[in-house]
Amino acid sequence: MRLFSRFALLSLGAVFALASASAAPRYSMDDVVRLAQSQNPEIAIARKKIQAARGGQVEARSGYLPSVLSGGYYRRGATAQSSQLRPEDYNASLRVVENLYTGGATTNQVAIARLALAKQQDELQVVTDRVTMDVRLAFYELLLNREKIHVREQSVAVLREELKSQRERLNAGTVGPLDASRAEVALANEEPELVQAQTDLRNSYLRLNDLCGMDGRSSGDRQFEAVGSLQYVPHHPDLNATLARALALRPEVKSAQKDIAIEEKQLEVDRRRDSPALRIFLRLPSL
Image 1 (cartoon, one colour):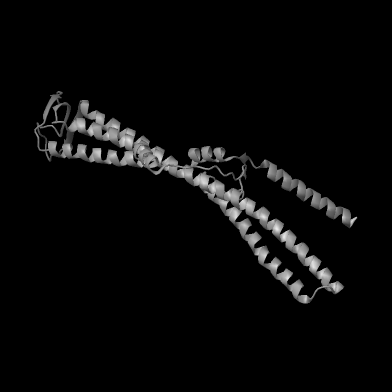
Image 2 (cartoon, helix red, strand yellow):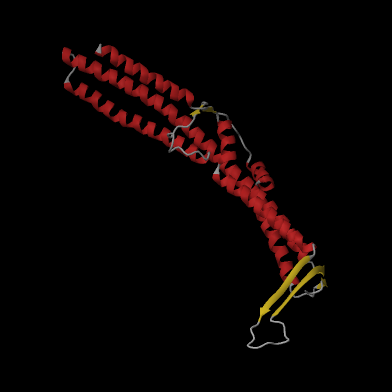
């Protein structure tokens, strides 16, 4: 009866383990890359910066539109005796101002806002490319660590069989105690390597969880099962062609070029501050 209960408990534990393993989604490298591009915190911050740059562009374009200025005051006085003067005095004014000539300041400010928006879009591409590269490297590292575990497990199994065989030979008197001790030392040296490979695999999953914006503290470090295998694909890049492609397509280079253009436009805005400006305003009747 006791043996049957143990067997039932082991079977129940195996069922729970299989259920938890099957509940975890299976992601390939492309799936993990798409998940990181949609949930990574750095990419989300870069997208918010684009929204802020769009708001700055709207603000810069408002220089072409008339502005409404209001002002007023309210004053109440206290008198010791009756007077013909009003105890309360107030005034309110409203003006509509339109810029007729600003010396090009408004045009340059709009151009700066447009360049700032384009720069933030390039920065988003920079962050996306970097996160994608980190995800791919982490995924390859995860596959490598998983294969290392298989190799270490096989090595430990072989060394255990070797130790068992050496002990049997020692009992039979065909080998000496030194051979059995060597087998024990070899097994003792290999078992920590297996533990280290298991730890490296767990760290790889934690690294991918962090890049994909998943919190692994609530439901464990392994929230998905990596699907894929290590494959070698030979590439033979040409140095000059690679450099030319990088100079033409790298978003970091485009972002630096936009920084230069923004500084040039800002210099024009600063120069126009000393130039005369022409405004027309319409003042509504005071209340």
